[in-house]
Image (cartoon, rainbow, N blue to C red):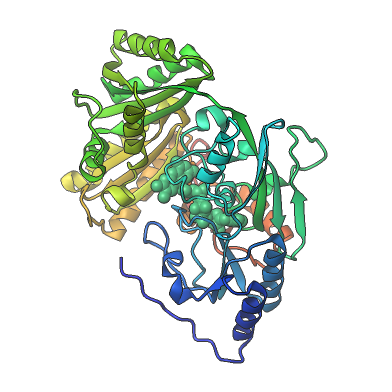
Length: 497
Ligand SMILES: Cc1cc2nc3c(=O)[nH]c(=O)nc-3n(C[C@H](O)[C@H](O)[C@H](O)COP(=O)(O)OP(=O)(O)OC[C@H]3O[C@@H](n4cnc5c(N)ncnc54)[C@H](O)[C@@H]3O)c2cc1C
């Protein structure tokens, strides 16, 4: 992807030029970047959305964030917050329809405190998930959150997108890891909710407005996250499925074996295995080749060997699994998780078409996949393939319909839109959602508008209007910006999840 700089024309004495001067003065040396020096921050991870800010602000403290917010609010210039810039829904790129400042948290990356007695860690918003994981591991504890972008994605981004990932089965999404938050509001005041309490029934729990708020209500500057006793015993398994329809029964079997110990239950397609072998040097885990595989992990404070073996032998006896392996060495374990981390087609194939971060009730995952395959054949014949993988145990499939699993393969945008509509209808008819964990960003506005009821959208708009009346933060992104569709476009009562 070639990056070019589309410089906004600023007259020397214009209000925006003055704002840039004032911001540079309060941010100081190293505290800001010219957009032309930060092109990688202005195009999203998938190369779909881009925008040019007036300035990239890199504050290093909550007080500087407050000053940036006050100056931008006074000048009527929007602020788009950015953490690791791994958003898959276009949430972290500057606006194109209004002048904006890109507020990067990259310099707010300190672990403030680790408190093993309370099982908590306090981290600045720009700390990466991996940094927090490492700080927790240093005191023999672990963070619940984990996913492939752990080395880049940040605490602020994870909180603001209510990120999911690989451990949701056991630890829940980001929301379940957050005990307290500090947030700079649109008037420059600070919401100091940095409490480390498990219980606090004193009115609305305001932190939840910012979790999953996609940066639309404030700038998250710090979070108190909950930690868990480290599970030193893991067994990761890779199993060839006899049929995709086996997955629901398999999940029930794994939960019955050790519900609390089941930490991952992921679906892997053969096309993904073959792709990661070619592109990332993954070693084929099993000689048996099947259309679909299960990647599962049990974790606990004592050996998981009997649990893993018991689960797999039940699964083979029931005819749900045709072959399986258990990782017995660190290298084998790493090989399996490398394969899982590299499954997203954005890097693996760079093929683009219709993309879904879908969730359906867990017992309908296989039915949903089959229905998508049938719709794709009906609409495209042999000219498209369905590529799916994901967090099976959460009913969450990352699903792509693309012309071919080949680098540079692109689907015609009208066809992609038509397929998206048809698959969304399927999703809603099964009680599903168009965004399981990646958020709405700019990408899903129309689709969310069709999923949510007018009442729900109106409630979200009223929250936004109360906390950010001048639409300072992340304008045009998030569910509250979804257009209300005409009545004819809305799902029927049976289709509404
Ligand atoms: C390879 C890969 C794998 C992924 N796997 C998963 C997965 O399994 N599960 C999952 O849920 N996601 C996944 N993602 C998506 C992404 O990593 C998450 O959405 C993550 O939470 C984004 O964090 P970030 O720091 O990169 O945020 P950004 O991309 O920078 O921003 C995301 C949103 O949060 C807002 N934001 C960021 N920081 C702040 C802040 N301090 N205050 C207010 N708003 C803020 C931004 O404005 C934007 O709207 C994956 C992405 C990649 C590239």
